[in-house]
Image (cartoon, rainbow, N blue to C red; front, side, top):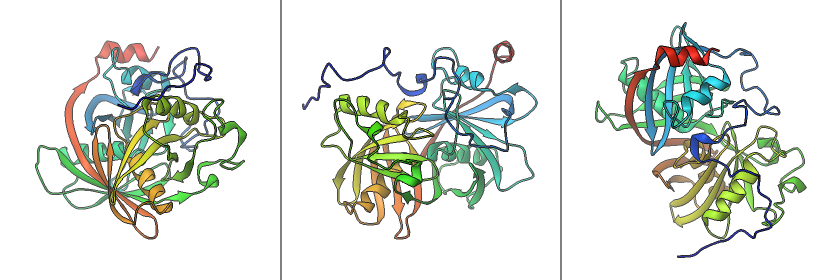
Length: 331
């Protein structure tokens, strides 16, 4: 087995970056430089304390619905997502009240920060509204991060796993697409030991840096993932993928999610990796299998860069936050 060691002089923080939903700021609040995702929504939503939990290849989300209960400020999100002191989740999707389609959503990282969109979060939301009888197998629309998105739960088992596709819109490329005002050669992107990574800036409604390293070495992924995801060159941070071509229609990736850390799977990361590989002419457009540690997602890349994500969603449970727990989060 190949190994890859980071030299001892590599610049690391005092504390190791926690994995999955334990990655959060010291005060459990969003980063001070991160722009608002919903400038028209300055206030945290209030939600009912009932929840649905599902996962897409191990990347799990809670779905909460807007209601008269808990005020979902950043500390409450972080507490609910905590793996040992809360329900445990890689994020929260809030289904806002409304008269029907397009249903409006808000999404939160486990560190409490609000973000643009999650492919797996969207698919888990789709499973929730299908299970509760609000949609059938016909396409339907939601609105998140200012974008309108079409989704579909395909015919299959009524009890899951659910086969869900999401039309993710068109990928955009280049430094401007992810807010790199100084370009991809910004000196702040040069790691003090590992140097400047070879990456493709991609937006699929949220920012991504698709890195094409020599190999998917765990130590490199952890060091460079943590370095890039919170790098000040990206004004809103970025999600990071490490990409290897695994066949004529296949990729293997590792993922470091902004506000989360290493993640078993990510829908937008799968889309960004596939689009970047086609952009670099490593793969042809069409259907691409994207293999992550949690399993395989399908991404279709059209010639005009429109992307469709498809894969399984497993329902895990329904439940209610304990009243005392919820009251404690209001203090």
